[in-house]
Image 1 (cartoon, rainbow, N blue to C red):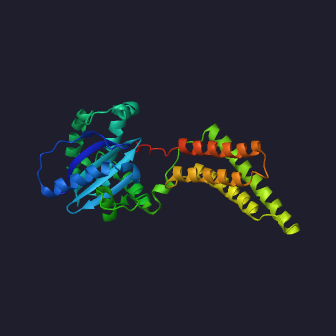
Image 2 (image 1 turned 135 degrees about the horizontal axis):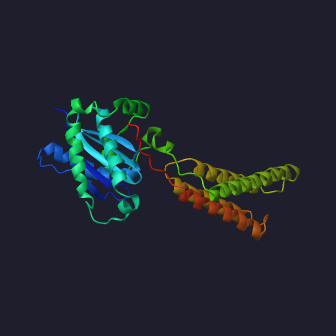
Image 3 (image 1 turned 30 degrees about the horizontal axis):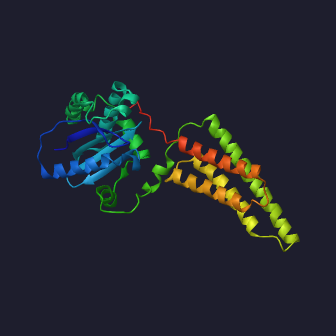
Length: 303
């Protein structure tokens, strides 16, 4: 029989359990699956916002949005579209019931254990699909899953979660890097303009340095490399600001470090104010990249 067995709500940042359904099943394979679910709940921020993990006779499905993750265990033959409709319903109710500031400030596990009442009612309804099919619109969820299917977690991902692998997480076949970022602010626009300006100045000076080398063989070609590296670092910071990328913050720090090093090498060709300007713009751009975080997936209330 295909059923929803267990569900829980956790905070994405640290995996703190906020609520969970109560169950008394002692099935050994189910307990092992719930152990995997517990490990997943602590790593939700590393995965796309919709995933599936197959573990023998059970599947673990989860979604995350606005700093909260919703996980469920169901039998392997439970319809995928119903599983994600169930999670989407939990998400809608939780967002309406609890304020975001409250969920981010709690420190005790299961601070919203009363939400279990809604979880149990939803489980009962979703374990009776015949009566459920007339109350929800499955077509919208089927279309969404077809257009953006859940990422299938692999055994390698599971081993990394359980601590058996030191490899870095996979890039999720292009799903995670396309995640939307928060809207651009005025400070972000200003930082991009200044960064492009610095990149243009470096490019112009680099071209002039090449002309000087062609006219005078005594010129140092390393100056050309330093100017072009500065240009590349400035433009790459603009790219990191505009698009989501794995290790985005670390890359921005490496870019500003490259800007600092190139300007240190060019100290003979630039005065102190010019160097400070380039370094300050790079640091300001790095700050804007860090402040512009990925945004949570907004709930779809048309399902």
